[in-house]
Image (cartoon, rainbow, N blue to C red; front, side):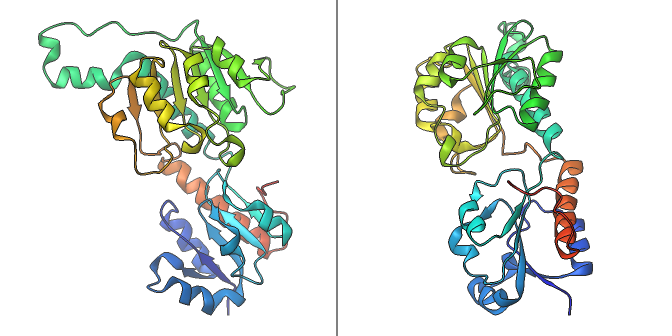
Length: 312
């Protein structure tokens, strides 16, 4: 009998990648089970690999006595209890690298959409407003200052694109990088004070929860723009709504939210805000590459080869 794998969800996992997994392994589809706990109880002793989408809390991991690999589909892994996995020497993989370009492209799209009023301008034409008056003047990008919170793979891809627009790059990390010439800030607050655009590309989790709050947003200021393509938890949404309503933050482009797919309704009526349904990696090419990387990590595990993208 082939090795057995439990897969928790197929929300974003491409069907062709799932089909490839099923040519070599017996894949138990948890999302299709009428009684999920019953399925887990039945197959748990045989499961050494779980394929998930950024989710595997400690209590879930504990249900599988022989679990050795959590293969996560997605770059974020804040929903995986790494401490619990490490304690049991369970390896965790994710899918970095293959989605950098797609997320960086969307980031630039959001920034341009907010600063040039592209969404509002589209409605301006559709609603016949252009027949009555010219569209208001907006802002361009060249010569402005951008601050990137989290200069990892995605942050670097964003920075490269921003430079093409003549934007000055600044960044805040846990530590300064030696391989870039961008200005480093050891303080997020100080960086927010000095930039026109604050772009969030950091990891989620408790360490960064609500790290961007009223203090940070007020420092970005009434002409500044916040772009978030990281995790909704990074931003205090209550403070975000208040700062936008009070004019203490100029605008925002948001692809992620605290309680997705639920979005604060106050944002719906704000013309200076552009909203997206968490589509940073949502291109056909990227999702196929992400799924294939999951498959390759699973294959490497069973072949007793080094994992391609282990989470440290």
